[in-house]
Length: 319
Figure (cartoon, rainbow, N blue to C red):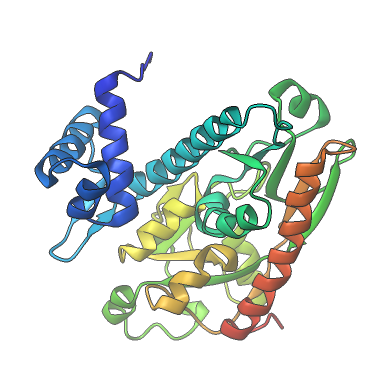
């Protein structure tokens, strides 16, 4: 489909971006210097154009739908990239600012990386950072042809022609909403799990087997494998977690993606058993990365250590 960013579509996206950041049509209108009704109407036109809602309207706030949350992240990154580029172009006579281009697994980018980027940009305000949500496996040829300078990947590693450093391991633990647990008060042991309750990320990494994460966790805790039929499957971990948040079942949570929801009480870790995943988060670069990419790598290592300490204070350590 050929989609062109017409002036109308750009205006709708700008209104949506402001409303998503503020959680309010009124505050978005104040930022954009238009009326609250105009913001609401522009967002409604965007929803009609997309054929799906981007907000759940509640009496207290606007809550992005899973698609709305995804769009909000992409728009914020895009607008920040545009603003950063314009700022660099205005600095006539100054040395060109380094630009870091980072390919990142989408769920990890939305839940872990993006909320922390402000810290990196405060440390390195001279760097223009571009983040692309992708999860295909990389090799040197693909990175060079795609203009990818560096990437974050959740996988088994094994890179032979690239530099790859693990900056964070991953803990797996089943999670469900308080509403789901209230509806199933007898759920106390892994052996009680039913296949149609389980929510699956069908592609946790390229080459993973079907139900890979659930199978690994159940085998490590000594629980029988249920019949797999009936449980919904998704191609992004974030979608499975969104279904869990909505009370639709039990997702296999990765600590990096669920810790904030656990702390806030939106998701509850089950059975008190974390298991170390086969896969981990690696920072992957071409040999001899540029200065900006070295800064990104150093920052990821620091953030990985900081997160691991916080994770250990909230979730039970794997046996």
